[in-house]
Length: 94
Image (cartoon, rainbow, N blue to C red):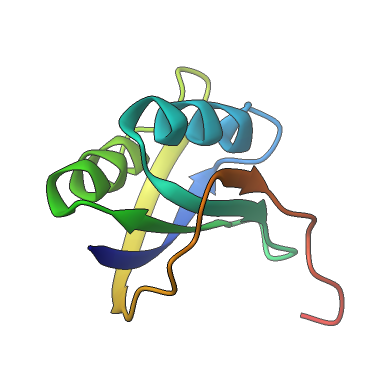
């Protein structure tokens, strides 16, 4: 199992990025979460089998049809054993 934290910048708010990410992750059997950040980016954490997580990371480079992805940063992290995939609220005090 691996874990990746992905931050996507571009025109990624208001284009169904989070919901499409959630549905894509569920279809791949990847656990984690996704949320909008106040700076206009989208952050996602995903855990699972390496090839499935990589497919979700690859998807993030394009996103849903209405998104325009300018950049994607990917960080490796230690897995926490997450289950399911959820949309989290935008954090405050960022």
